[in-house]
Length: 43
Image 1 (tube, helix red, strand yellow):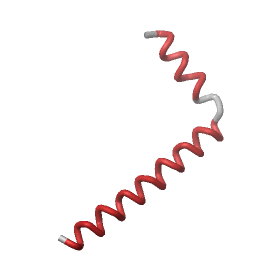
Image 2 (spheres, rainbow, N blue to C red):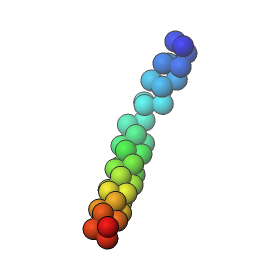
Image 3 (cartoon, rainbow, N blue to C red):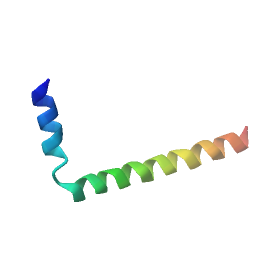
Image 4 (cartoon, one colour):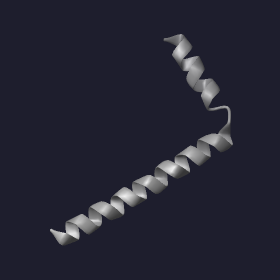
């Protein structure tokens, strides 16, 4: 289990990469949210 924590720590060393991933996730969530809203309006 300790090794898993070390792996996670190492994967976060590249901050720019993490920010890029988070931005992509945020964009996806916004798209999903607007899809849900349009579905709700139709119903």
